[in-house]
Amino acid sequence: MKMSLRQLCAPALLAVALMPMAFSAQAGHHKNQEGYGYNRAQMAERMQERRQDVYQRAGLSEEQRAALDDAHTEHRAAMLTLREEHQARIAEILTEEEQLALRNAMHEIHTETRSERGSGGERGHGKPHRGHHAEPAEKTSTE
Image (spheres, rainbow, N blue to C red):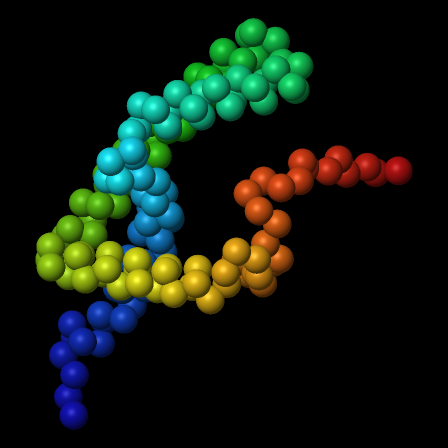
């Protein structure tokens, strides 16, 4: 049986396409009050409040806070640009129907994986699940 080049390359292309999209799939799981998508402005405001709380607990100066906020803004803009570039590249590789099929398959696998793990269990790379940011980072000493 002779396979076409497209049939031979399809698994590799799928694997390449899945990795970055897997990150964005997790980012879109929030719902707004109507149950659709999420309110980006509300989420950004909440994250800014959390950053300010962290800065306060860390005892950072106003100058340090402003510099970190600028760094965050630049990082976010760069990530959004990278995401747009990635989506454009995926659109060059897959038709709209194939992209939809890929997103649906990723969602199904994500749902299956979450139901298999349950609320406890393990997360990626066999590490035990401790919850989201459950423990503060520990200082390493060179004593």
